[in-house]
Length: 596
Image: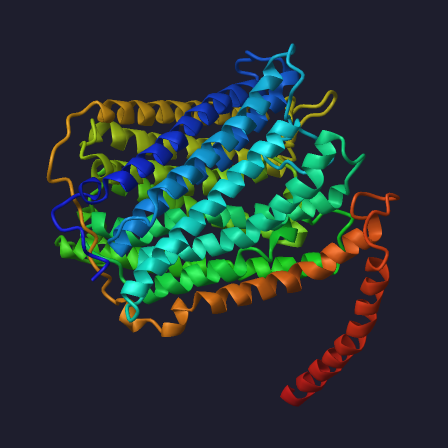
């Protein structure tokens, strides 16, 4: 079957052109990782006042570069490489047209280069170009048009990549009409379906508002609208980064542990849940925005809590799969099997530590998601402490660890030093534990995020968890360890590329214990799930967006550029829905009375 088809030949032996694409995407990803790490250590040492090699006026250029290169370029380039590998491997067929594949890769590379140049130009005073808008690039901050143009080209490239994968899947389906979708392909397709939905909002924001505004075609925009459109995209993009890590945890990690995936049906359910639930929750990033009604925020909070379900299902399934592998290796006892896992393999240890850190990130994420306790930590350094646990470790460490397993199969070159690799992943875990812990503690103190000077004149932070200065030292040490870990990873990979090619590096993935035939057929009905996902998005965002536009205009207060019929149409919609809402409330009250 399609899930165990490699035989003795490695991926590069079977699909040399696709392997070149995967390697190119990975190298682009790791170049962005290195750039982001350089700006990260500069930012860390500057903010903690350990070493200041830049003026504070350049701090936001550094912060923007750190965010864009890591959370957009590093993650998504790795994703497209990984998904190309996963889809080709699981379908056991090459991509339909490799020229199309190189086209989307080139578009993504060109787009990110344009965006990167616009950011880095901010360091050169003689160049009239800057993009100090941070990763969250909504109004009222404005970047150079090159920044927005590059982002648009990059997103279009990712859309073509998805179309390339869907086209290859459809070609396979015509040849195998009665077969279930292979699990890795199913994961790729559901992730891309979610990406199309989520990225449509940020594409509209860039093309309709931010780029014309930056070019001077329009005088102003509605900041609340651009902010809402960004977070329409900004929260599901977190899962766009995480779902490749989930793919690796579900399909590769059990193999490295010596076993196989516990349940194929549960893995499919998790990815369907992410498709349905990732997008209609973005308003929970806007709890303190005055332009959005509290009721909409409460609904978003409720929706967000449902996202705990796929994470808990993943924890169960992955741990069960790893335990099965350990027991296949001779592990016994209630917890004794843990000692029989391959902890000396960097690919295994890295992914396990990443999963452990993701659990911690989930707990801090619950604080972010709750309306009342979010008020305490909103816009404090707690928030970057949280996403350094999720994208900074659950995603980044999984990607680096998985590279130690995948790279030999896409190049026929063994890893230069697995000992260095093991040290590198452990060092990343220690560095992130130090830095993120201190960020969370400072956030409880009220230390702000996104500022080069976190101390204010005449103000002392309360002494707790060792005090503000001690936590700064902890952040500096942790950030330095992370930078060293990144250098070790890049160096190990560069030395690996210099190794001679060898044979026998294929490592096929076995089928799951509970296979696809145990899953309901409806799980493979992507049209159904996409339709439901779109419906949930409309229910979550139609009224908030209409209210924002009705109150502030499509291009800002007083501009009046939205169609004259929109205001009356919105009023008519509210009038029509009011009786339905009253009827639903009465019916619910009657139902409660019957139950009592």
